[in-house]
Length: 281
Image 1: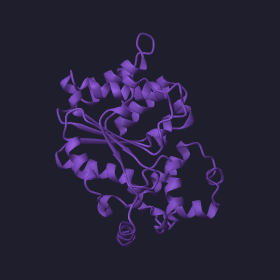
Image 2 (image 1 turned 120 degrees about the horizontal axis):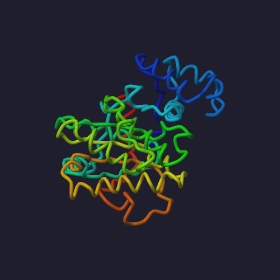
Image 3 (image 1 turned 135 degrees about the vertical axis):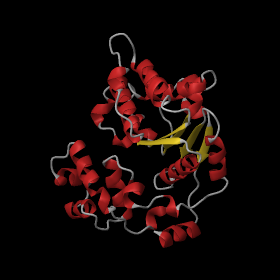
């Protein structure tokens, strides 16, 4: 297990982004965040000022702020430990039109690292990539499916470094959020170039507790995956989903993304692999 890893610290270049994330999440004081995390203010202060923090605390704070802990710490894929044949399977799948990869594993088992590895391989083929951690969504973003799907489309745009054009595609009077989201992807995000887009969605289990959002969103992912069979534009979308919990919500078998695509279950790291990770941090 990765619980034996030593401390991590924020790359100094990310400190302004961290402090901005605290404001965006609505924490008026650092103490409020520390209390919610049940951590000492000193630990949080060290994190925010780029000082070493225990590995598990570092990951927990980052996730609460909706940040990619590997990116802001520089952990990255430079120390990625391969677990064959998982990588070759993912590599072959991501090259397939309209593909979908489902990565399931407990926390701290390398799901985000594998997604980063997949993005790097996709970039070698000049594919476009986008990464979105659903933990970045606040509670109000899960108010209803319309609100959540707007948040989703806007943040995928941001990840792709594209302008937010949601106002051009959202029609709350004459359409539905699922139709508007589909139009936004088909007519805007996927049409930027004819190169594939690898969309990595981390911590998908974040939607499970919201019955007004989860079936609509997850059903939409399945629908987009199936559109690739009949629409060449949707062949460009390659989905990668990562989640740590069992899928305990009720979904129509024909509208679930959890029974299609390539399933990947990550095994625990061996003691030798843990030693290698610690050596290379």
